[in-house]
Image 1 (cartoon, protein in one colour):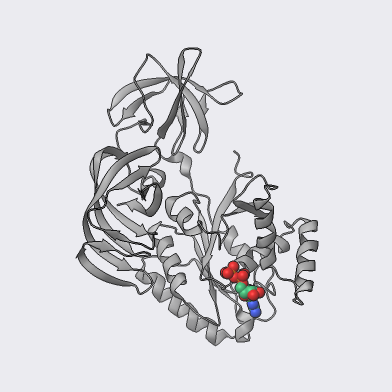
Image 2 (cartoon, rainbow, N blue to C red):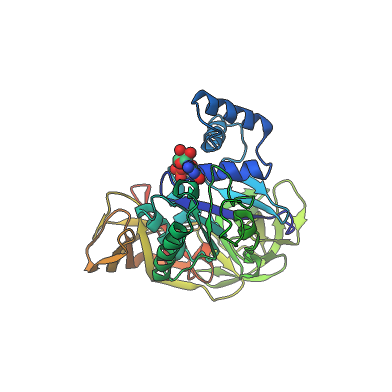
Length: 409
Ligand code: GDP
């Protein structure tokens, strides 16, 4: 895909009711990316409720379309600026939102952290900020929303800006920008506000336009095997390029066995043979000879991955029921699925209180983070999250349900 076509993926996070949906509506409306019929529908719903234009309805409208199966793409909302396209991945308020963020279903390149300027920082603000830090998201813009509710006050803005900056410092992360906005009135979203003349920073769109797309293609190849098909007696290995680039004729390693193999052909459904497949492309390949392959193996061009049955991790526990030492879990990382147990919980941490709760613990509560050692029943192929995020994040399942997500340190 060319750079012009590629959309920068963003997430909008923050405490409930701080204005995420309203901001999405405003972004779509001000960039002319809201279909006219949608706009009329929203106007009508707002009038019926005796409200001024309620941008939060945009999300409801899109949500309803999704549930009726009208929109093909179920989780993505686009808008554009003169510089490029943006995709807002996943919907705030969506049940799986946090889970998708942690497990990497929603991989954002930048984040907007929204805080109600009247209410200030709340628990979810802290949890979301913590997760952004844990996921290593560097391109973060903090929006102090509802600035209209504090009479566009510079004093209130400066106070909150100080608080959030201190908080983010503790997480070893920082905001590239902190902006005073009103999503509902459109102040400093697409257009500079006449009511915050004391502020000389960018609008939300200008801030987003300074962010860079992540250069994922330059990473070393990781091709997890998803499935094996037999077509006319030939083995087609199917998978998705999770990092780097796969080329025809290339010699690769089949991990964890470290067996050398060579790519014979690369094919895509209903298309000619390909010379190469790029990051995020799903393809079928044939290898020379008849090596034994199975789901869960990883094809790489180098031996820099870690092959191990013990991994040092940071885990975010999503299941409200929490975890008790001794429970057996299923570890999932790309197409690898291996039974595991948590061998040691070095420390557990409450992101809302920003406190280490306990050292050498025997349990983890819901919404807590733990630094823990996981022991796997068989070796897996992983990378550290910092090197190759796709191979450095995992999900833990209990009885078929995802209960935690984590990253490999
Ligand atoms: P979400 O839960 O974070 O998606 O929050 P919503 O977008 O649903 O907003 C919650 C409420 O705050 C709604 O009633 C919005 O109309 C209101 N709201 C959102 N942004 C603003 C703003 O900039 N100013 C004011 N005064 N109200 C806002």
